[in-house]
Length: 115
Image (cartoon, rainbow, N blue to C red; front, side, top):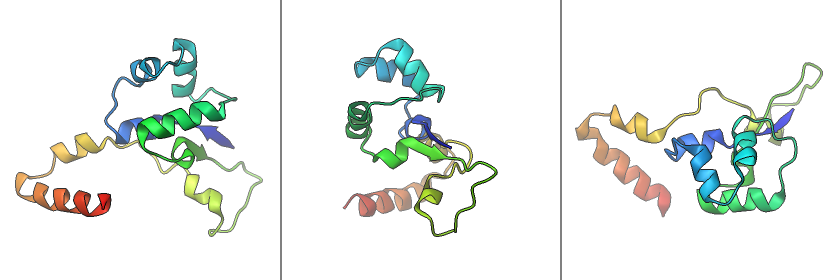
């Protein structure tokens, strides 16, 4: 089943109060809550676009796919990229646990990835 789940992008971006973030973007509180609880069965394309612009992501980053028991796809199928791989990682929190002498390596890698 394909479902809308923007929480992983919020976690990666270090957005802790995602509901407030969405409300500041102009989403109603009920819609923001629905998005975050993955209960939204209908997501407008303009809302996906607005999130992608603000979060610097693609629509694929906002969705996850969990196959049902009857679905078998080859490993090379494109939907496998949307498989939920577990916990949503907050990159800011991960960096806090890295020794200071190794932070320069991360800074260099991030600069390389941005270019």
